[in-house]
Length: 73
Image (tube, rainbow, N blue to C red):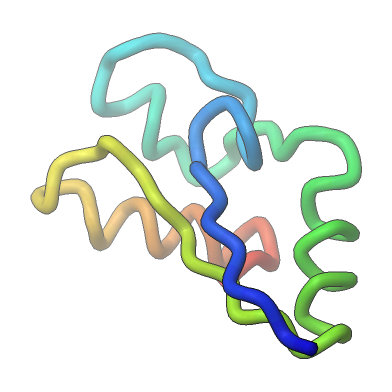
């Protein structure tokens, strides 16, 4: 049975470095241990993953680039 899993970005997938725009959307942000493996495991089981964030809409492009660079999107 597939599930829907909601997962925050900052502090869950990436190390949270503070409140500044540049620190949140740094392309080379540090992915937390086992985050990529856990996402891949959930996907392999057919689960639907919803990434959530408190980031502003104006940060969407940079956030998507960061997720792609980390292999999460």
